[in-house]
Image (cartoon, rainbow, N blue to C red):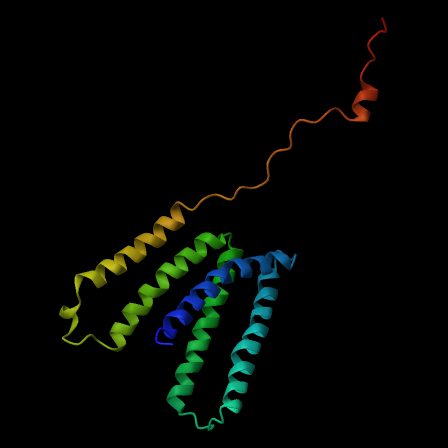
Length: 183
């Protein structure tokens, strides 16, 4: 499949887009306003173990991989996992500090590509130097920041529950009311 990378990237968009809402739901579902976020994060860790330890271990065994792993690759991979986990913990702390999933995740998903682009360019400077950066790239960075800001500031408010319609008086209210005289 020539565009498999795009399918996998869109799969990541879908799953990471669900992440914040599900994580917030897990935190609230713990029924513990003080420690619910830590309990939810514990289960995120269990899920990471299942998906990020067992699955690649099985793939390495099935594909007959050798077990040589250079220190640089191991170190950067561990650092990547650490910053990813700390980022996930930061999301939970933001929820615990009264941030809504829509706002927190909009900031995260607008800001992370900007950080990624800037760090990647610092790590691997563009060919031709910094002056070779074209205006559409700079515009993309600005638009990403503006998009995150606009989504954060103007997100729709949740619908909530409707107020119940006026109901007929209850039997207790009828019993307490004086009875009109009979004609």
